[in-house]
Structure formats: structure tokens, C-alpha cells
Amino acid sequence: MKLIRTQLSLKTPFSFTCNCCLRCCRDKRIQLNPYETARLAANRGISTTEFIAQFTTSNGTYLVFTDKGACVFLDSGGCGVHPDRPLVCRLYPLGRHVSGAGVETFSELEREEGCEGTYGDAGLISHYLKAQETKPYMEAADRYLELFWKLTAFMQTNASDPGQRKYVRQAARRFKDGLGQEASSWMDMDTAVMKYCTENGKAFPSELSEKMALHIEAVETWINDTGKGE
Ligand code: SF4
Ligand code: SF4
Image (spheres, rainbow, N blue to C red):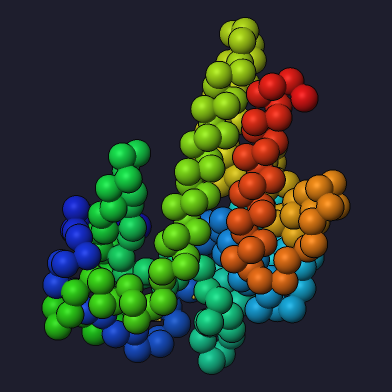
């Protein structure tokens, strides 16, 4: 979607009230990170492995949309996973951007055709984010982005010949586009953490925050060990 305002900050005046016309949950590509997948899986009472198989496409990268263009979780009453909806759904009609130097900005998206929401400037972007409970989602997005850059740097460093470099560039692009096939195991937090816990004699955590920390630890360990040739 087109951006109509960019370079906004937490202090930019902004307010928006959704009036639940249910038009915006159609014809979109909702990309997920492992934290969002784990939240949605818990909402459905299933493992991330089962969730990825049932409700995502591209090996866990995107939410399924029906043939009629609706999100798989859109029902007659609205979003069927509202307490655990992904960050992009919470932010709408804003977008969030974090530069390589860690500078956070926001943008405002073009209004959805027929959107019956009420726009205004009665509050600030920070107020809107708080009301949408975006904090754990933004923290998770930042941690997975950091991990992504580590993985990309690792792959580039370890691509020694031109053919390999080409593969790495392609893999990195696919990963950036949404954790494509080569990186599909990353999306399945339960499987990755279970494997890591089993191999390292750790108890499988029940809390999502602990599970995410172990997931990131597992990937970082893999990067470090592989870099040492283990
Ligand atoms: S997860 Fe919920 S809010 Fe997001 S697109 Fe699907 S139905 Fe809409
Ligand atoms: S189109 Fe606008 S008013 Fe309708 S559900 Fe989406 S955000 Fe809310």
C-alpha cells in the first residue's frame, strides 16, 4: 500500500478508531516472524509445527488467505485471533520502520478503500501503539531482525567462491523477503527449541518469552558453531 506520510515519530499527533467494517483483512500479504507465529499457534491451542502446516503459506512465511481473498482468521464478528493478531494488523494504518542504525520511524498508509475508521490527531503515535499493545511485538521484531542481520553476515562471510556468493545473495534475499524455503525451520519455534533443549539437557519452557530467548540462543549457537567448523 502507498505511504501518505513518512518519517513520523512517537510524538507525531495521530489517532485512529477502527469501526470494524472488516474491509482491510482482505487481499493482503500478512508476513509473520517466529514470535507472531508462536502467539497465533498458542491462540489456536496447537504447536507452531501444526500452525505452520494449517494456517501459513511459503513454509510459514505468510498467513493463508482464502480463495475469496479473506484472511483465514476473518470471521463474521471480525478478527478471530484478535488478542494475538500480528504486529502489522495492530499498527494499521501505520507502518513501522527501523533503520540499520536502529532509528525507529513510522509512516501512515493510504486509506483502505471504503475504510470506515475515524482518523484524527487527538493523541500521539505512542498512545496509539500502547492502545494496540504493540510493545512485545515490536521488541520481538527487533530481536529477530538483529538475528537476521547476524545470519546474513555469517552467510556472506562464509561464501568463499563466486558460485557460493551468488547462492548466499539469493538465499539472503529470500530470507529477507520472508524466511523462504531454505530458512523454513526458523519459523517453527517449537521444533527448533525442542531440538535445542534435548541436545543441551534443558527443560522445554512453558513461557513464550523464555521459548523465544532459547530460539534465538539456538540460532546464534548454530551460527557460532558452524563458523568454527563444528
Ligand atoms: S489476523 Fe486478524 S486482523 Fe490480521 S488480517 Fe487476519 S483477520 Fe485481519
Ligand atoms: S477498513 Fe478501517 S474501519 Fe474497516 S476494519 Fe479496517 S481499519 Fe477498521
